Image 1 (cartoon, rainbow, N blue to C red):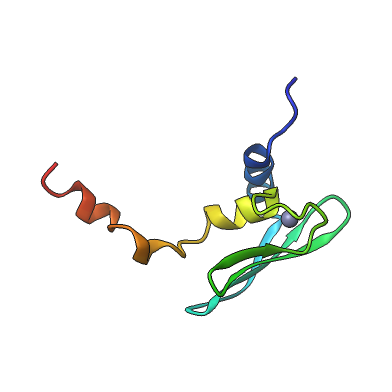
Image 2: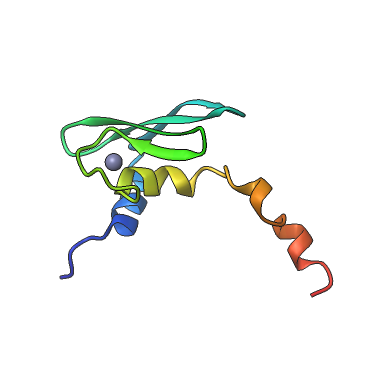
Length: 87
Ligand SMILES: [Zn+2]
């Protein structure tokens, strides 16, 4: 069985209800993610993603999970409905 990647682990964190959004505003989003034995502080603020886990990886599973439930980049690309028009 292949090692569970960050994407697969992110899916599991969401399905298991381990991602708890504690703050969401136009300034950013903060979530507590319950990992293996630890709760990590994961956030998107000032245009960057941060996580308190020791992975020091911008695409750790905690951030990957938060990205999947956060639409911080909407202003950077066309709205999906607009994209479909004229197709
Ligand atoms: Zn992390």
